[in-house]
Amino acid sequence: MKTKWIIPLGILLLILPISGYAEFYKYETEDGRVYYVDDLTKIPPKYRNQLKIYKEKYDHLSETERIRMLEKERQKAEQAVLEEQRKRRALEKEKYLQSLKTKVVIQDNQILVPVRLGYNGKEIIIPLLLDTGASIIVLHKQFAEALNLVIEQKGLSRMASGKVIQSELAKVDYIKLGPFRMESVSVVVIKHQGPPVKFSGLLGMNFLRNVNYKIDYKNQVIHWIP
Image 1 (cartoon, rainbow, N blue to C red):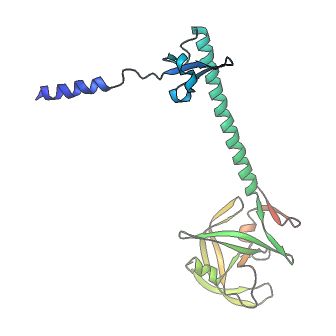
Image 2 (spheres, rainbow, N blue to C red; image 1 turned 180 degrees about the horizontal axis):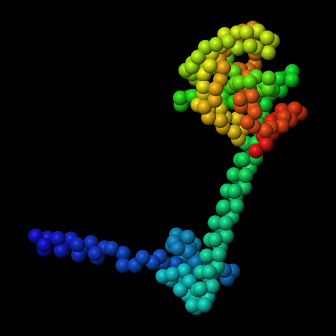
């Protein structure tokens, strides 16, 4: 039984590479430039007759020169890593600065803000009217239904006009606006009455009191202040 295994293993050993070193090839062009490549196909055919092979890239150099070149490569690689880190930081900074600006729609002194609301794995983006007079976020019923919000209790709410209407209290998992995200936010759900409007509810003070912002009316942008 042992003999049967010795022969295949011996064959396997024979076909394994005997060296882990990569070969490098040197050639010189007509204008005197010297090149080192790690693939024969990278050498133009007319230069292959002068081919020189090196087991390591700098084998043709003296020990001092080889160390110098290896150090030069190390520094170059280190600089490449630092440059990549710098670019990544610059992109992250630009992304963050962009998050501090939110494009809004301003019409007739009404500021419509695009807000993300999430509940139970669903998310919608709707325009809410920025209203510092509303103590809580208000959603029109059709959008609460789109999120399948669970109503916690029913009651009455007083509108800015003084009118009292039927309302429902619910809670969304989160609200996201600009760089801010608030978890477990209470909302009042009402059935919109009257002529159609361009917003889906009110962005009230239970969100606004927690953030700082400045409105650029000319460019219709909110600048968020961290």
